[in-house]
Length: 619
Image (cartoon, rainbow, N blue to C red; front, side, top):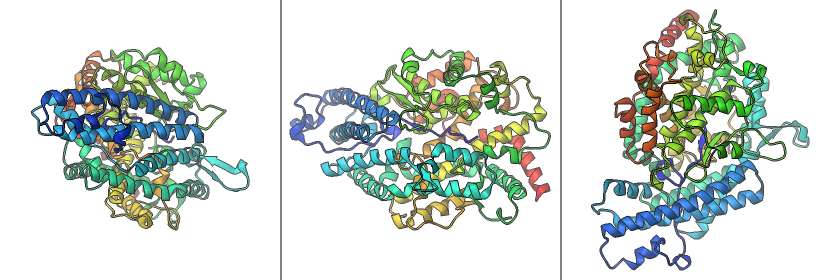
């Protein structure tokens, strides 16, 4: 099954979550009320700023941003659940209004830099100023149009084997099913190439978008958008890049062992002519469109004598557990920790299955539409293990939203983007055989001799993802910095994929290609480093919560299900939102102030020993 637990987070206008703002509203059209920061700024230019003025500015700014943000999110929800040219235009217009106001406020907020404000107010000013500012009205409109257009084109993209025959057209979901199940390299290559050709349609739009984005970042004092993104992590951009590299090097030996084992098994399956003994492996053979997770290969690499599995897809079908019931099971995990039940509106307004009458963006996502209780998820749920785990992930976003809903608007967000992604994934690590047994989805509990199979299955998801999670933004940092020009997008993309993942393109490079754009988060302009950070954090949080639950034993067997003690500590961290630097949020649960990938090594320690032994024998 192709895991999709690296999902887009639909964020409010909170700079730590990378929602980009555009400045430049014409002052002549601005409101005369005190909530107009630009006018307030002009009126007070002659006088030195005061603490009282700054506090009033922040209160008014938050009220204005929240109102516009909610309107923009509602328009985006309609657009993604009912894709038409009209809904795209409405979403773009609402987004432009919200983003323009946010950029305007960001510029105006500079007046109060240097004032001895309270710590919370100082943090709000910092957050306000970590955003784009595009002052030219035409550029602002074009930026919003391009963002909406690329999202729509991705959502509607289909690969047609015979362009004149609509019946030959396959959407991404159908192509992913082929990648997950086929073992014919010719069929796999056709599906892979067919999907990656679709992003060529909006490559020019993306290049224009990058240029406009960089203009906005420079207006706010950043070298480029990539530098601005790296500044979102409560540290200088260069320090974050160094931190990410440090974390990658911690886990690289484990990835290398997994990669070598999978190579040997793929050679047994496809032969030496297709899978080389050394060098990069063709990307279409990993059971996933982006080679970001490899658990669909488990039948090929499964250790002998290992019967234990986390695959509950067949049981879900046999018991006729539908989409709503699957979500209720996920909700039950969170309530077992002492957290609240989902509001009634969640069940009335979420999109849990794919509608038959219209185009939608099926990519799973979590939404908070009023910063209070109107929370929803958007998924096209099927009875698979993949979607069962994805539900636990998406509900992590929802419970984070609910936990910090009493924070001021600018603090209604994750401690950093990685935290928001890690919350549900931490819970998903507790989806163990013992947990599944309690739910009635697994009849017998396997003994520890079966752990290698379960660990390998999870490593094909979690460990395999790490280099991909790291390299996507390595590529974008180069694009935004001008080191990767449009004509070299694919060249640089595949250099990084070979360097970090050890894979290669299964066909010659396309002329003017744009393979990176075949991954949703690139045209959606969503920071991807947060997913890499989330993979580090989820194991670190899991280890700490297991200690809190008084668990003793192998880390991979721990489930915090039904532990009120662990839930209380987790909830306290969630309620902090973005009010404190992420180091403090991390310390609230783990007692540690630095991200540490050693928890991943602890979790997979038995597997690492086994992999190295197998590699020595098989090679």
